[in-house]
Image (tube, rainbow, N blue to C red; front, side):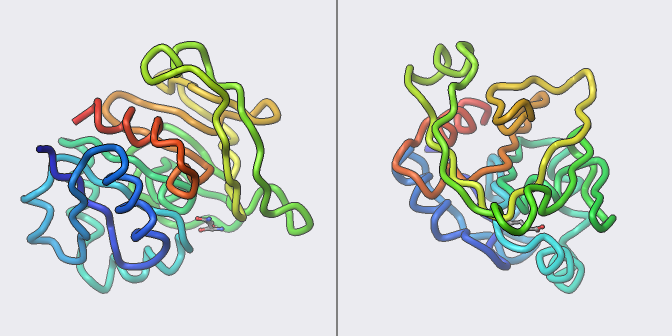
Length: 192
Ligand code: GLN
């Protein structure tokens, strides 16, 4: 069985571990560099991207993650999406540059910073997983303001891409790990 790492320095890594189990994979809670050798793919969870960045630097993991992402599939949700982006705004911060996207942090504003909506995913998403609306939990989410030609959009919300892939990588600006629907995690497992 494929082993999937979940970066477990900060944020909702436990929820991703449970979601992976629902999707039929074994989670490995990654806290140090040596563990990257044991896994076939890695999830960067939601949380606070600035704090995660600090911890990545502290644990000497930043460069290893960038290198891992050049070889193996990575899936970033919310703060994880911010870490995987090419460029980050509001405010600018360092990122791994694994996805050709520009993201604006906390872009939905303070009053409506969290919400749950039902998305109509692209037919292709339903074909590759299973049919049905996709429940999406947004929590102080970023918005993908620019996406390069290599970005493939699998779901949008209010005209902005919220579930995208680029080659072996997958990104959501919402939190599929917080719902019972395991389709997004299953899609990631298909990439391993
Ligand atoms: N607002 C957080 C950030 O900018 C992301 C929120 C989340 O992961 N739910 O890093």
